[in-house]
Amino acid sequence: MGALLQVANLHAWYGESHVLHGVDMTVGEGETITILGRNGVGKTTTLRTIMGIIRERKGEIRFGGRDMLPVPLHRTAHAGIGFVPEERGIFASLTVEENLLLPPVVAGGGMPLEEIYDLFPNLLERRTSQGTKLSGGEQQMLAMARILRTGVRLLILDEPTEGLAPVIVQRIGEVLQKLKARGMTVLLVEQNFRFASKIADRFYLMDHGRMVADFPVAELPDRMTMLHKVLGV
Amino acid sequence: MTTIFGIPLAAFLGQLLIGLINGSFYAMLSLGLAVIFGLLRVINFAHGAQYMLGAFVALLLLQYLGVDYWLALIIAPLVVGLFGALIERTMLSRLYDLDPLYGLLFTFGLALAIEGTFRYLYGAAGQPYSVPPALAGGTNLGFMFLPNYRGWVVAVSLVTCLGTWLLIEKTRLGAYLRAATENTVLVQAFGINVPLLLTFTYGLGAALAAFAGVLAAPIYQVSPLMGTNLIIVVFAVVVVGGMGSILGAVVTGYMLGLAEGLTKVFYPEASNIVVFVIMAVVLLVRPAGLFGKDA
Image 1 (cartoon, rainbow over the protein chains, first blue to last red):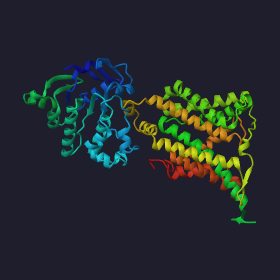
Image 2: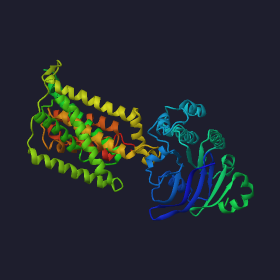
Image 3: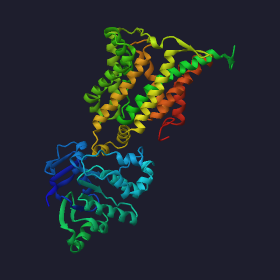
Image 4: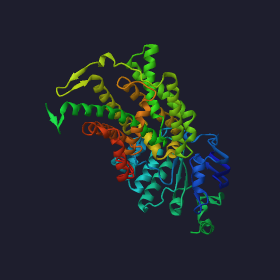
């Protein structure tokens, strides 16, 4: 499996504060990768830096072989990376359908609108409602659905299950399985262990702004003691 | 003679019409200000100057190139809109990361520079711009005499306001604008060129002002100060309507124009200050404006 995303010695800053201290990671084509770690170790920052939202960065980010550091934020999606933020980012001044159609299609192979509505029938039903009138779970579905349309190759998700009911979490798991079957590459940050163990192929464990471990899902049971210690769960 | 509240009906309706005309300009100008403020968070003090530029471009086109009113109505907004886009790209865009006060000071300085230049070149006195022949004359409505050109201005301003509202509320471009107003970073992360969107928006606002300026040329005289006199009232309109609210800007524009007209009928001495009295009252009761969100 060739590496779709290659991150090497990545540093990032929020103003004066140095948050990432040399992150190394690779994401293979078609892989689903989960980053684990305690709060405040730099997981969200890693995603936002790869996406290009955080511009004070140094090191190497290669996507499909292309150097992403000089790419401006509004060209990142066109390179093939889609982003679902932790706060979901549903727009209150847009209807559900306007939210869904907002991100421009950047490449062929995206999910057609009918298929998206098949996958998320609630969104079809409520397509004329104001985006933020949806429930938390529906908003998360919408946030993911709108990226699926665009034809990106890598989907970056920041805590997709946070604050959602178990039945919705299960639903999101099903959607991610479907995406995987379609060959989508997924990089996500997730606190929900059980959820992550069902969808991820590989884990990165993060601490103090760098990756401290990297193991496939098969090794998860053996690593539990170590994980409990590091994560403090 | 028919009277209403002891005032001759014709005089009453006449003032109401003047109010409606003024309101048309207030609405079109505050609309542009609201569009710019909504996305750029810049209080565009150069809006009056851009309105004046629109009228001047029409006048100069006529004097030097013989371009008539109808063509000027298209060319002047394009010229001023491009000028606005250039200003945004080369100067205003450098101030977005700073305190909003800098944008205000910059556009204020820009307005002074533009108006000063035109006063130096053309003097402070107004120059006439004649009504296009097709719209000369008037129509007797039975209860009053309506100059055709004024009827045209009211109609065009309504269409312009409605068109801008539709552009922002119903189109894909409008959805980008609304989304970018809420969360610029995420809209960029979706692959939309927000800096370009900002340039376009400022250009659109400037073009709207210039369009209003061309419409105004045959009614008021074309003078370097025509914008200065108007812009203060327009800012009051924006404050009353609620900063950044498109609908608020339009409705309040017509409303305050009419309020001014009515005041002229009943208590002419107060007609120049009624808008500001209303502004003060609204600020006391609803600081976010009549259509503002956080009221």
